[in-house]
Length: 41
Image (cartoon, rainbow, N blue to C red; front, side, top):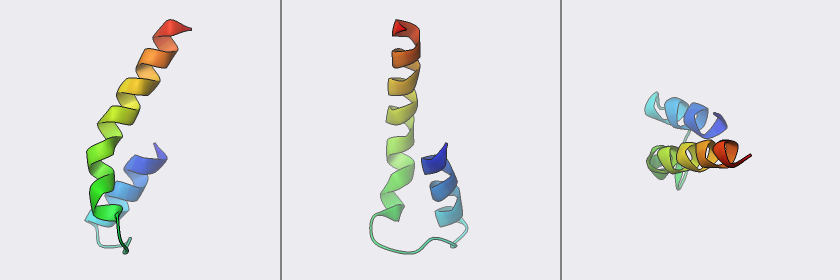
């Protein structure tokens, strides 16, 4: 959730700096990992 919020602010031009342009690409991997972890519990 936090990464998606950072990505959203980046798309609005409110978050500047190196690396923020790549955060949106990694959000799905974190979601998949989280869902997998929850299903294993």
